[in-house]
Figure 1: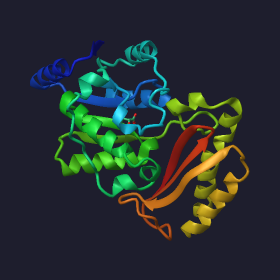
Figure 2: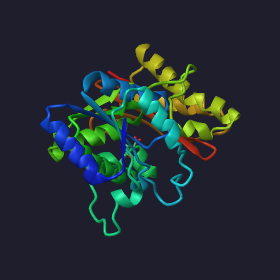
Figure 3: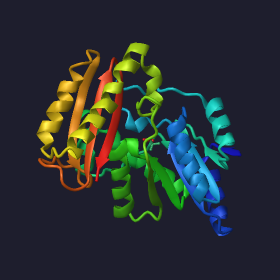
Length: 280
Ligand code: PAF
């Protein structure tokens, strides 16, 4: 396994892989890998000749005051995990390599990026789309694997790829959960034992919503209210949003008919967690 830190080296490696007819599967990450990331890497490993994982904590997707500085980091551990999963290349640039001091160009996916997480994090998806576009131009992957936990992110990336004619296929892999249902996230590490227990309210609420729908409930507001009421059981939780939206444009729906995303973001102390289910 090779660790590449320079853009030019990664680009020439990708070009020579392409020339020799090898497919490149790519998993972009911010490191501190968990089972969720590993499931994406395994998906890439099953399908590609060469698997590239990027590890880069992207400053432009954090607003001032968010958790950029305390975002967990452990490159040695990540490197070992990648090695064990048969990753071929880790692309591990630093911030100066990715963003020169004169950097001025951003990718904005209008409308999709101002809803759900975009309301409390208005510049977040601009940072995500920009770094993913840069990474695609550097790694030149045939396909890239993203996790369904970041459902809005995956929709925005798909839209960016279609609108800007990237030749990378986007694969979205299912959410990986802890045994008790909590969606895996690098931020779970910040939860105190009490908050960790309280955080289960997110998954429980999503399951409750799913059960209401399979029992015939179709009115989005009734389901939303039930989720709100459920959250009242947990004092430490602060809801950021509960959204029931169509899983294409992310517009709020009144009744649940087509592909619907039920997404929740909530704070437990200072830790913000997201989770979702898709109702088909
Ligand atoms: O999902 C993430 O970890 C990040 O948003 C990504 C896609 C690696 C871009 O920094």
